[in-house]
Picture 1: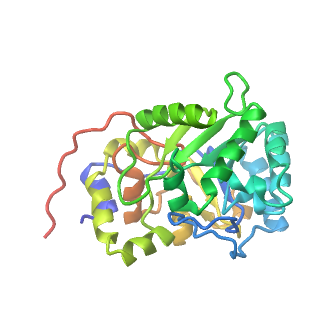
Picture 2: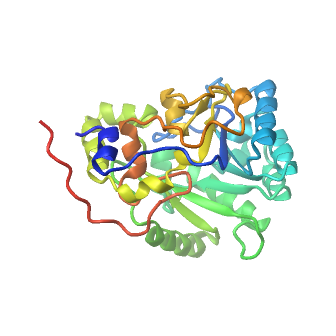
Length: 329
């Protein structure tokens, strides 16, 4: 298999940063679930949590850089004791705040009020739901998760999320169950819309399809089952050069729970630091990022395979007939 960097070169492409648009903040790895596909390896026993001091540094960076989108992730980001403060202060700064939510966190004791908080501050909810069928969701995420997720979606719907004209955005995220690429996003979104409405009375705005990344917990599963090399070959053979322009690593900086900086949250989990003058959010300034190279590895095939995969779902709508890569000696 040809390495990702050489594949880019073969297609006459480079991967460099555009102006900073999104600050994606991982506020900790603590989660009330332990999903088999989780590239963060989050779970109930993780102790990595962003401190109040680092939260201060994140908010200061938002002010300095003029970032207008703050994407909160985890773990379950809502389990960080400073989550609500970040939501309030970031929205007060005029930021569009996104919460990458697993839906079941609304039933954690002490967190029952979260849907109302999110609605009050008009936070965009990006909710994980890897299938509209109960068995598939519980297989990937644990017994009973689907039922609790549906309850969470209904609570959000009752507050106006997903309703046309409400401005309260509720977007769902699909990950394949297994070692294959996501199906076409538009077709799957139509299936989700029909099935969730007919079966459960649930409405949402958009569906994002994401490929499972061959890192961390999912990589362990692949290696255990003898599927790692085959899955990486699948991703590499489906490389689509049309996806490169829209990759999230071009206009997003990922902030780790300890304040360190990365090109994306996948690089964060692999501890591949940001290329350029900044290593920590306290040092992040308004210049020095645009034009910098992006740190890449073979896991990047996960974002460039087929229709592409990013935190905002598929990157292209029409798949290209790709030129075969040259055979390797």
